[in-house]
Length: 490
Length: 65
Image (cartoon, rainbow over all chains, first blue to last red; front, side):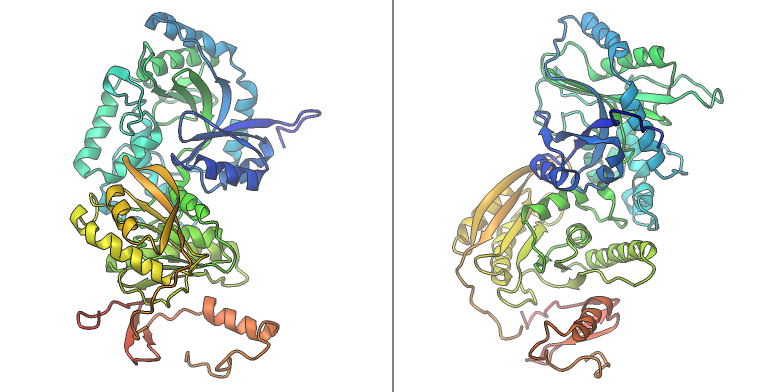
């Protein structure tokens, strides 16, 4: 291998973006699969860990991670100069002092791992309807690529979106992060999405310099800057521009916003500055879902939720409002010794879930041609209030509860939530059973929960950000109290 | 019930956990056989629930719920 050398082996400090709230879960997965301890950044939604560069393939297989980058250098307490000119000059001067060599080796190694991407990134944004017509890719990552490639493109153009006044932001819409932009897009109408593309084109970030042809050996790069904090004298656009200028000087690379080889990341969170090089082009989180619904859950979030319930081999895991099946599909892929049952009352959802499972089956088939492997997963069309499951027969219930804003209405939730909790309580095994429920309607949920206190106890709450909305994931434990059998029908 | 009566006994035998042959056949039926079109029948009420393209429809009608 090109990176092998006598003495010290090439190591990398990897930064990973994860769904906010699930940093601890991600750290556990890293410990389990890579044997490395993680640091959880104060810049929420990021963890850092060190691994030998040869572990990169395993790093890419992490299921709780959205994006990866290799850290060039971290500054825990960077002292920004007061004036804009001075602060920006400092950043420019920083470039030649940074230890680029090893991280660039890691980046190169990472490139050789990536499959050749033949599709060129296009600038147009697809409408939600046309996304659904995309054919499922057969190869690993292929499906994700075709489904996400245009959506991702918009996310890469705007360097940062900052709240006016630059106040310290907890507001997901204000926080400048690629993930934030991507998630917002999921909910955007066609009109909004187009507006975003236009806005990004207008923002004055370090733009390409009209190069055509030219040296094949010269690398193309862009700088993406995320900035959060209320004491900076400059904007992320300015930082990206000046930092980028210095990078170009130093490496003699060509700047290109859309067709780049190297994406340099400049993450500034108050006094914490991290310079990195991106290792993922598109987010990993769409990996299992090829057929989108209007509210498809990120599979990294689905993974985090499943981990929270600590599935044991032979557990029966049910998602009674599965939508396109994000959670059960992630479950069946990662916990194959459990049995996963997905259900929804909506025929469209059920059809999409079934199609997504077919895609998963086809992926498995191509890898293992000797036997046609079954997947421990089934889809059923059913009514959440009348589940065709025996009382106390299910170990885990995990679902994304309907949000008033996107599906159904807040008023409907008042009635739906208590009925759901009762029925989920019935099917769940007393004492050992648990539920992990995601909802944005926290008030309604709390009220419904108070009514079923004899069946469910709240064990843990994780605050998350879903499509720009503040949501919560509740881990509930089933009490020992038995539910009555209701109907002889089942 | 799947039209292969010879493969599986009507009930698990007394020592089924150790019977590897039985377990293999059970695994096959549970995980590797997919009913695409057909029906599930409730053993008590006899009510049939249609299966279409691999997905059973178990929604109850207004009067049943």
